[in-house]
Length: 296
Ligand SMILES: Nc1nc2c(ncn2[C@@H]2O[C@H](COP(=O)(O)OP(=O)(O)OP(=O)(O)O)[C@@H](O)[C@H]2O)c(=O)[nH]1
Image 1 (cartoon, protein in one colour):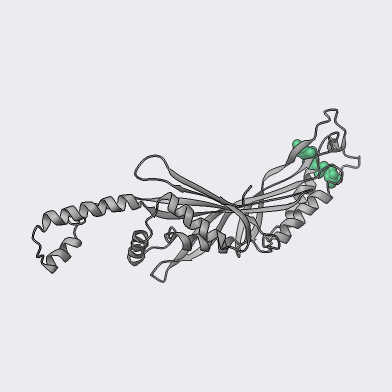
Image 2 (cartoon, rainbow, N blue to C red):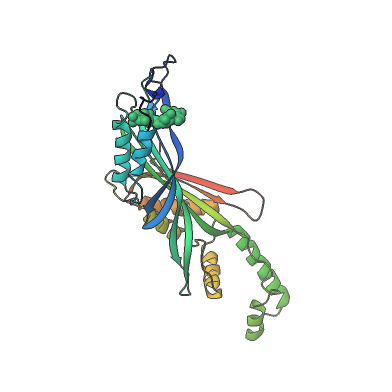
């Protein structure tokens, strides 16, 4: 160990005399627990540098503050403690602190019919800020789902009707002939297009919220949509998925409205905004809808 005092550049004064909005570290790898799962989060942590004459902040103090979260369940009190550590270790230097964690939370999801299950990774982001006005914590998750176009479905049904009229010109039709016809690609001549879609849901947590409502948010979104993407799939599951899609035809506007209604029911949120993206298979661009409640 060096016996001499170590130069401390951060403690020097600067002639720039300019405060900085945010100074910190981005992309710290941190093993945490979220929704009962082990997650390696990527963490950004920082403070404002309000002392315009101070050369620098103390990166190591922020790094150590974030270490509190290692292997711990990510909760609101834990996040608040980190922000508090950042500010108390930067007294006279900083008035605000922010903490952002992003990663993917793995959740086991059951198949629709068969006894199988599998894992799905849901991207999440938690953004927390403490300043003179108080604390603000936002939780964002992404949910993947399938959307079948209602217009395309109606157009396909019309083609099927026309084909039926052509193939069965008589008013009197034979039951078994029609049954066979319904099971053939000659009869069901057209299918609607569907697409893998993504909902990005951003909640502002209500005061008093302790646990992060990751599971509640994902469950309520998937229930509202009715067609979340699946993990393990046997043919029986695929058939159930086809039925779910047929009974949940949706434009991006429909998906956004369903999600808006579902999020309004979540007691853990005081505001939200959401965005759905349907990566259309009809054309090479996306169909997108956004909605918000109480969000400023
Ligand atoms: N402020 C600042 N520090 C940096 C930067 N890049 C690297 N560091 C280093 O981060 C390390 C930790 O800084 P401090 O937290 O001030 O370390 P310290 O002085 O040993 O710790 P304290 O005694 O708690 O202040 C130092 O070695 C800095 O040189 C930068 O861009 N800004």
